[in-house]
Length: 254
Ligand code: BG6
Picture 1 (tube, rainbow, N blue to C red):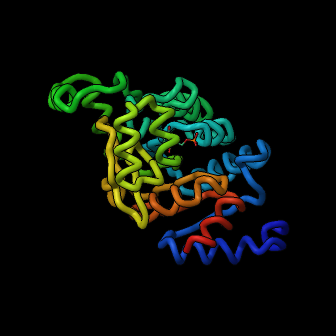
Picture 2: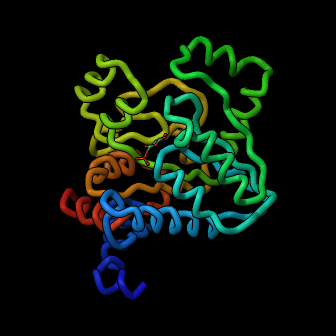
């Protein structure tokens, strides 16, 4: 806390919360892009925020990503009545960073349960539609996801995420053409806060978030400043956990 006060981060937290219409902003000193200790801290702080909002018998939805992997690793309390679910399925990440994996790791730490979404990548809208109207396990899990009390998710740079997910060159060009700078939950956002491209999948979308009790976003590094602004601009976000590098870069943009 002393370091944060010294560096003026507490004031910046209040300023960003106000300007981005968020309930709370938490800024970790340093740059998580350059320093793995800061990355760990970002995870630890986010796990701490989660513990503050978590009550008995809650459903927590989580996204994938390397940042969320750090959050799952950092959970150091148990609450066995918790159910963890992936926020969305089949987005095309490496296994370590898939929302399913993060959900399982986090449930393990909490001593709770998890439900997973097994959807292959690149499934057509028609197939998804068929899955959701059927009476299989996927449909049940999709319903549990919609009832999440808390969502914890990462934010990525649009073009980087499109590339990481193996989207076609044409799709990436389209995402760029539409001005997307940020991505969350498979949805690509342009400034000041418009969803301009969506990967079809099952689970939560940015425009479902008003119905989720608490939405916690975690993202750091100055390269993600625009991405964070664009995703926050779509609304529905409550708490942002970020680092000094991103926060200062955002301050220059607003
Ligand atoms: C993805 C999430 O897995 O990770 C995205 O689905 C998020 O919503 C992204 O934007 C962030 O990844 P990272 O590795 O930069 O934390």
